[in-house]
Length: 229
Length: 300
Image (cartoon, rainbow over the protein chains, first blue to last red):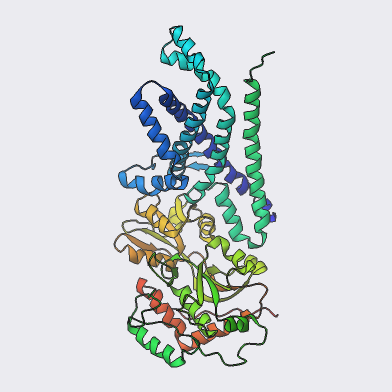
């Protein structure tokens, strides 16, 4: 533990990268996932097929392979993130961060799509039929009637997906991002005599972050709870 | 395989002089043959109850080596045995116990990555670690380390066309190495920004595709990659760190230290150390240096 306390700024900076990876990928995955979910439950067969194939492909691929694709295969086809070079304080967001965000977002969006779709399926069919009967177009049916109810039912599974994303950011440790796990390995390498306490310090960091996400998800659930009384 | 004699070892050494190719084939005596054969262990060579005596009696040993560092410890997908300088030194130690180092039923060359070297020694998963294992004070707190059998330093590997000549030229820029390694720390200390991947070969990819301008680790490892990618990559710069590569042994078995030092000393004197160096690191253009001075063993 002493090693971590002696270099606490490095610990915080590492978790800073973890949080940035999580926030950016979280937002992007929610956006893409929502579009995908709309495609999967929508009336256009071609879009339905595209979204289904996307979900099958990304959900059936181990995350590390998605990472490896964007790190080693994509550059061969000219897909690289060299243009990305942003610095905020001690944080440098470069090609590696970009590739990590893309990998995490594409992967997680498949799960977001399925979480939302489970919510949509939880909305009784009568709701959509009633909205159609009122003359709403598909877009209106979705945005005005189905999705607000679906979102409510989707909050618990979405929170699980986002928590998984938070922990999945650790894969970026071996793809050039100096996030928490990579810093933990550094501490371990330099302080072989303190492995257990170093591991403990990083576990605590993750637990705290996950608790924060859980807290907000619980708040959202409460806020959108349907009270019949 | 106890019966294998010194004569056989000598004959094998003669056979090997011409053949430089790192031979990973355990069985094929004809092509190159084994580089090191088992030695005869005389009664009373090892003190009663010592770890060496236990291993010699059991006739089996587990050695932790790297699988991903050409020239030091490397095992290709189709190789039976890993090859490299670390492995050659391991074979000398194994042979001294009277165990045939080529016989994979007797010697288990376990892959150890940087992260699990101490746990493997503490838990007895391996008996010895020879995995480009830098000697440090922190590590000596938790495991036994002795040597060094090899002193190396960190350099840079850059594209052939690059005009980078030292780590100072890369201040503030990204330099690739292995996540959590000592090399990454040294890169950061030198003012560049270390980015970590899982293995050195992945860093080579990132240098080749231009995502980073350079990678850095021990010069001997880089020389191996430069040789593999001739005309595309080159090693540049002064060594900006010094790593003393040693042998790791169990913290509960301090008696192994004197034995390891003895075998290393013998190999320095009889030329088998220089020969192992020439055969493994020579092909990538590294000159055979003077053998390093061994650290004294802590008083037991």
